[in-house]
Length: 280
Ligand code: GUN
Image (tube, helix red, strand yellow):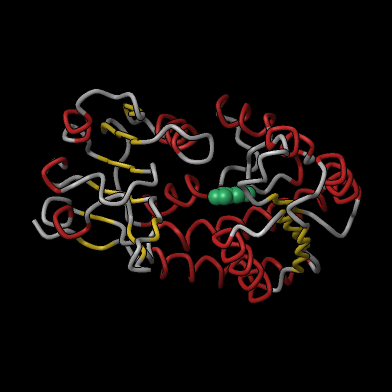
């Protein structure tokens, strides 16, 4: 089988185009992004988010703080943004420097402005099946599956990686759509035994080419969340695209798959937060 490529770039572009109208009708949507320190990958992500905001007509405020910023200073900045009526969404770019307690920072963002969906209130709401703002990457994957008309109910979804940002919320979202779920982690014995049983395989671990074609069931849908910069400078996913596309029925490429969807969902969350605040 030669897999059909799921074009995340195109789907994301369509979604961003549709959002422009909603932004116009809301009048003003404001998103604040806080970045602490000089992590080069984070800087690229933040720049891309800013560009996408501008293109969608969303007011974007990037707050770049030095590596030496104290935790209290960061919390004070977040508190001020929580109270700022022109700001509807707040995102603190991860990772934060080691001397800052990331959980404390994320918890201090008002749940109504938590466009990453990382606040315990939003995590709990997702778990209970009554989602508020949802984490962008797994939400983007769900949108892709929906657009591609992938049947989820009754399928076996295997998720490799159990992070709070992707793996865990991904599992919950697929569970709510009727999939049977397996979550693998770094301690999993015989990973291939699990991945070979997946109708839908989501890989989000950050290890280039961890999953190869022989680990994939014929006809599976493969979603590669990995974004690894190789020494050559090339970007690679967690899935070996060449061998995997010989087995899968559909597959996301890297780049151009999940990545663009994450940004589109961030913009959608900012618009959703603004719409909710206007509804009161
Ligand atoms: N760093 C890597 N991925 C993410 C994300 O989705 N949100 C934030 N805030 N930081 C990240």
